[in-house]
Length: 476
Image (cartoon, rainbow, N blue to C red; front, side, top):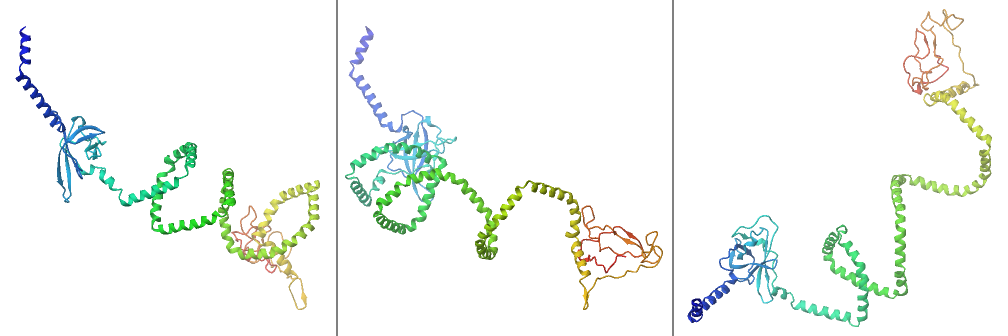
């Protein structure tokens, strides 16, 4: 009973109700007034950011990360740099949930609406180091440069608007009366876009190096920019050329274009088959380079050969006819079984005689003995006087003494004079296989006062100019 009376007394007291209502209103007004500065008694994370311009930013504007409000702009002050440039410095009150902000984070002032309301956008970086309380984000991180709405609208100046009108007028004239063609084009876009997908996938692949191609194309355009007038004249001349081609467009150009796809298909099928031929041709011409280089010195001789060879080739026709019986006889001879036996016998004879030929061949090829033999044999009867030729001979008188060569002896000559000694070499070295490489016959040194039987000591060499085999100089 007493509690109910107390309640009735409070509710019935207009002074207390008015005071409570006034207190609630004051608290609501205070909170509403300070809403843009953050709630009271809530901890904040303060940072300073340098930006090129505040760009109509005001105190209390929002600070956002990824579109989410994380703080407000507490104060905006101007700041003069050492070079005299004046920038804006923003004092930000941020929520502690984003502390610490990476040191490589960027700041950008963006439009919140078309009416000019702005906010500060923070793009968090990837650094592992964070900004301390009260740190300053440098102006180099105020990127990218913001574009104001009025700057965007200022791009549409008088020239731009006039050009846009001309474009719309040209597009309108180009599309007027072509509704059906546009409908067919749109219908054809379906297979076009379907087939375009794999082509665009190939172009977007890094292996196509499309980015490098685009950069190279840009450099090419920059290079040809100084000759733009000449290029414009080129298009004017092309118009003249195509105007001339228009008179033969049908049926000549049409047939050429119609025959293009079959020709390209044939090329696709046949050109790979020609690659081995082209490769071999390349290697063949590379091998021909030394011969072709040598032809420059032999050009005159080749020209004479062709000059002489043409009449000879004309006569060779009759020669070939005359040789036909000869080749027929040669064929019959080759097919005769006795010929094979004879050839085998010749092979056996050559095999048996090969050691003999190997032994006697050096006597001519190295020592020139056969030539000297025929020369000396010819000179036996080829020399004479006014009365005629006669046989060359002379009497060799042997020295007197025991066992000399002038009469019967019981042993080789051995004195009494120094000339009465036997010098005999029945089988001299002729550079044959197994022998000393020397031309000994006729080149031996005469050893006076002693016997020399067999090969002469030492090597007489292979100088055939010393070899005479003359009958005028006996060995002993």
